[in-house]
Amino acid sequence: MSKSLSIIIPAYNEKATVQILLEKVLALSLQDIQKEIIVIESLSTDGTREVVQDYEKRGKLRALYEDRPMGKGHAVKTGLKVASGDWILIQDADLEYDVADYPRLLEPLVRGQTSFVLGSRHLGKQDWRYRRTAVGRGLGFVMDFGVWVYTLFFNLLYGMRLTDPCTMYKVFRRQCLDGIHLKSDGFELDWEIVAKLSRKGYPPIEIPVSYHSRSFKDGKKIKLWRDAWRSLRAIIQFRFAPL
Image 1 (cartoon, rainbow, N blue to C red):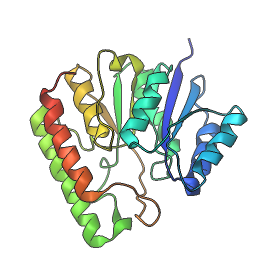
Image 2: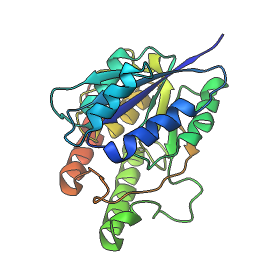
Image 3: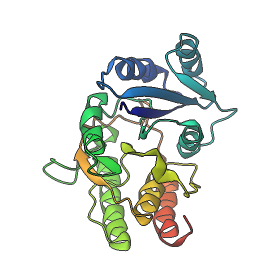
Image 4: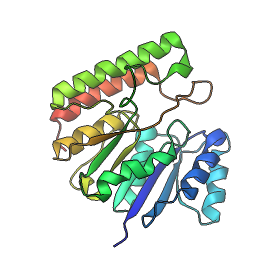
């Protein structure tokens, strides 16, 4: 029996990359796995919405349009509400991650080895500095070091040994979300998903993936101090809050 994959793509002010990304996703063959592409467009000001509308009119994807930008986490949650695939994959509208990694990410699910997969940017690298070099040496070091510390803290608090819990590439069975209420509207949703699925009995396995960091000039949207505090709060909060 063939399976289906819902690909959730939040998009906000990504005109420079969204068309390239969509073409890559559409062209990728997953053999007998059917793709359901869901783009959540958050009222971009750079023409991203018009690009998404064009693909929707041609029947290439399903588009959901937000009245205003409410955060990446909010957009992802909007997409999750309508996803109908057997499996769900979260994909940003930029090109930092490589769509060619989909088959490797899906393989453990296809084999029934696990219900939850993370695409780790850390595995296979020589040291913990594996991303964000595009933002500058000093700031890149601060960001990499901060994520490394947060990962250690997450593992300690949740009793895990993950290398990259805040990776964008999260792939899981849709049923894993049954009984879970996701609350985060920002980038901290990445931590919340791993926290709550793990607590529910779906500890993830990690698969190494490619990653090419972009700069803030090129559209990187994370806000260092704001999102750092939100992520720390999420790690602590969702260890003890109801699912």
